[in-house]
Every structure is written in C-alpha cells, then in structure tokens.
Length: 293
Image 1: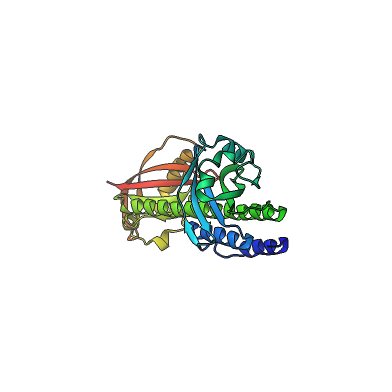
Image 2 (image 1 turned 90 degrees about the vertical axis):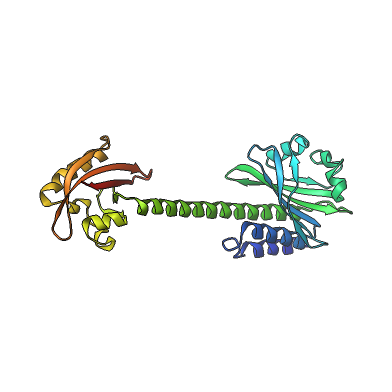
C-alpha cells in the first residue's frame, strides 16, 4: 500500500462514528482488522499493560489470512525485560528481523517460533503521558523492512486506540456516576425523614424527598427554586437564616428547634439538622433534615 493510501486509510478510520457508539471490544476489533487490511500485515494486536507494569495482556488480535479475531495471552516483564524497557522509552520498536533486533530477540525462543513471526513493528500506547499498552504489527513467514509510511501509519492507529480507550474510560465514568446518583436517589427517597437539598450560598431549594412534600403539604414542583426560609413562619425566618449562615461559615452541624408552615396554615414543631458539602468547584450544598415531634 502506498503512503497516500495509508494516509487515506487513517483519515477514513478517524472519521468513523463508532468511537461514541460501539463497545470497546468492537472498537478495538474494527481498528485491528482495518489496520491489517490497509497495511497488508498478517497480524495486528493491541495489548494492555497491567497496573503494576509487570505484564502485557492481549485485548484484541486480528489475523488477516484466516480473518480470525481473538484475545487473551500475556507477556511477562521478567521474561522479556529488554522489550519492556524499550517500550518505556516511548519510541517505536521497528524490528525488520525480529530474531536479531536487540529489543525483540528475547522472543526468539518461544513467541516468534510459535506464531511464525519474522518482523515486528510495536508502537507504545500512552494515555495522559503514561504507558498503557502497545499496538503490534507483525509480519509472518517472509519479511520486508518496515517502510517510513508504515511507521507513521502504526503511530496513527495507536493514536486512535488511545482515543478509543479514553472514550471508554469517559463512558465508564459516566455510567458509574449515573449508577451512584441512582443509588443516592433511592436512599434519598426511601428516608423516613423529610430531606431538603439546598444551594449552600443562596439557600434555594434544589431537591426534596417524598416525606418532605408530605410534611409541608406541597408538591415538589411548588417547592423547587424557593428559598428554604419560605418553609418557616415569618417570625422564625430570620433566626433560621442566621443559623444556616453560621453553618456555612464553618460552625459545627446544629439542631434547630422551630416550626414550619403547612400548606393548610397549620404550624408544625420540628427539629432541623443540617450539614454542608463542598463540591470543590466553589459550590456548596446543604442537606437539611426536618423531624416533626
């Protein structure tokens, strides 16, 4: 394949919509198969480095002649120390003769013979500046020197693998955050106490549970956006606001005995406790617990 064709192949892969739509497994499968077909290389694989940097594990392998996808297998750092050291230098390993190249000769006794690999082009994969794995292009049987265009092509594919992994991490973080929010919502709603969540600076009510709606006799849609002080009788509002401000200024969590106004006009004695959470971006949230007595 000519340099122009390799360049067009990378451009085509980069325009793919699967990065936000496909699973990680599918993304890696597409990248290895496409890389093999475009470059004419027999074997293309993607390996992930374990957290302790002592092992590489195969996430995806595509063999062009058979059209087979597989995964599994591992390479240990204590068995191939020179190779792992070379990966950590951050540069591509272009072994025109894998049996003789200083960084890949360690594989001569097992890996190369087992898979009939004759030449290796291995490009480190980095995420946020840290080595996370390697993209491997391997010639089988006959071998030819790696052309500059192939090296550039391999680096471009490695960059796409990095993008796929970063997208996967971001999606996992979104899923975990959503699951955490759902669990928190379930606990929030299941509480037997009346809970109000308010903006820590303005006191604006941001959320409440079903028990809070029952306590004041008003629906959630009526309460959202109101200042929390509106829950108290007029003569109690200044005192409650002062206690709330003391809490925001760093006072220990307090318990305030006061009254709240029910929709029907009744006054209900309650004990209010509150705590403040700092979100780390300049915003604070206040969780108030209202217990009638």
